[in-house]
Length: 310
Image 1 (cartoon, rainbow, N blue to C red):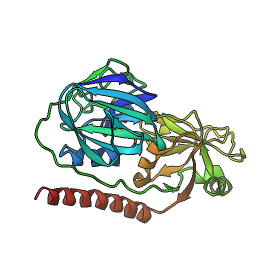
Image 2 (cartoon, rainbow, N blue to C red):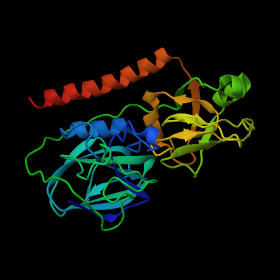
Image 3 (cartoon, rainbow, N blue to C red):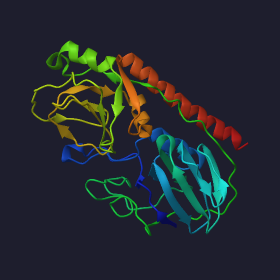
Image 4 (cartoon, one colour):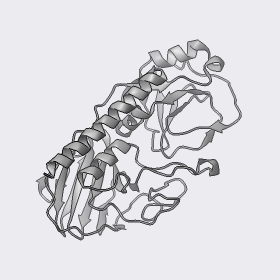
């Protein structure tokens, strides 16, 4: 069992999310950085989709009510296990009664904490993820709060010290071309991809809102609702793009500037208000090559972990 002492800005139970229910209006939910979740779980010998704790910004504290082993991935939040500093990318043995504390995030926005055997909660629509907008999943259907308890399986056996490197960050986000290119005009597409965009404080797990000094992308287009998904880049009339994330809606009536390629979507987990990014349109071959590179990263990790056992 884990007891929440301080929940920080936003802490929730997440796995890869819910798939196959968007036609019913059910958002995907799940971790923003799926690669971080997989890496953390593999370091512990868990299944890739075992639920983890997603921690936003930091300033949180958890107490372990049983022995376990943890893996910490994501941005550095100056974490301490009791009085001992611990770092992202490594496994740590935890004893009953120990407390993990997170300070403010450094050079990022989110960290992921995995426990041996995964966080145990009821599955809803085949997922343990917390749908924060709809109020179901996770431990209570909501962001974790003080005194909440999370079920985990005690683990008292020896576990080796293991570490892993996370995929590299990119300053330029690669995107698929827009289905509304002709509607928006080539001028708007060029303006979007040539500018540096800044993350606004209104950003959250539903979407990252962007602005720039000029409002050259403002428009008056109105469309019938169409299906959208994590990675869809909507363009509201005010000209400030919204990159939809895991808690985003399933349909929308704004024209689309494009869609973030699968291999770059995890990068949005670490974008915080004030950060800046650029976008680059790429073809499907480039997108597939980027995905294959990340898959190879995970495959190399699995091979290294297998060798470490011998």
